[in-house]
Length: 335
Image (cartoon, rainbow, N blue to C red; front, top):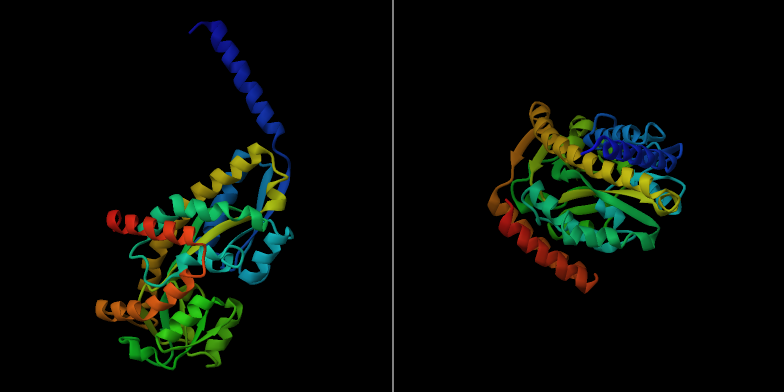
């Protein structure tokens, strides 16, 4: 290549870089979530902020609001949808308030590994969910995770389905959760997360269910004695940005945020899975832990299946068909 051609390419590259820089404005992006500092979702937000800052030359600054400082999940979800808050990472359950097909991801006993979920949400089904968000004033930048959920309670180990009978169980405010746990014999009570520790401490609630890291970080071991490992529901965590803000961004700014969400998501999911192992090990010295047998899990799956079918019948048939086809494919190819 001649010197003249190299010089021309250098000039073009510099012009493109200058144009891109002009496409980035000084902005502060408020990114909220309900988890404490140190939780893997908080670390994911921090990684996202680091990537965005680096690629925008420091013009795009992401400000993290952790530990429910902007409210519970439902409050933050509504704020992002209305444009009062810029970004949030929260459960697919709450996102189902705008696009109910997101709660197909909440069907109990659907997955046996995080890798199965990765394949599902990064494929045609996950993309179809994100495509439904803009008409609800939201834009989805991808899926992070809270992880697989486990039971804790203050009364007894859960070794059989009968051990759940009568337990006052705090659940996410989601009808599928309420009916699924009722089908297992528990007494499910919808409750916002910030109220949970106090309810367990006062014995207003006997039990709750959450991933290992949340159980450890929230110090539920102080008010719960038993932890029973079921992996009964995987909690996906969509990363959402207000469409009002998104529409004000340049294409360059949008690409920076989109790419950063994907890269930070891979980092966050790895941390999540590592932290689940570490949190279980930590909790072994603070709680009585038992692994629920495959036979009991199969019985739980059988009892909750009619609930899943009931809710699936109320969703967009095309979405349900795609979900089932992609899930079958994933189960056949990913362990």
